[in-house]
Picture 1: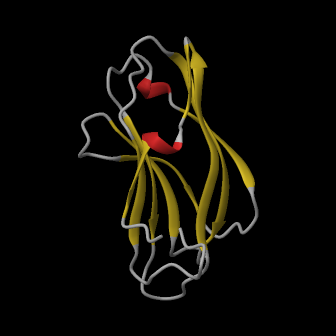
Picture 2: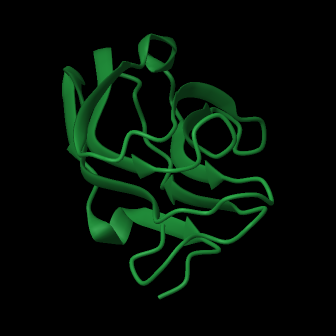
Length: 129
């Protein structure tokens, strides 16, 4: 989130991948590197999924682990889905703000499909700079 400073109080910002077609895929996994410098217990990085673009389900969350860590999430429910979206969302309360959540090397892998999320395949909402 905030390469030049801390994230905002009461933040709700997201980075959403364009819709993906997983019709022919199985054994799907989302893999990425995560750096989550947030207020432990109050501010979170969420990985969420939607098959309709409006209702989102949380798959994973981070809080306060200020070091780069690999993340590997099973996407079992998405196998065979014709359309699905994944997003990375930072939420915060009005208390302490820290440097934020960074993700890198985003990959969706599985049997029958491998997708590297390229810069042109990502939509960011409420991100500055």
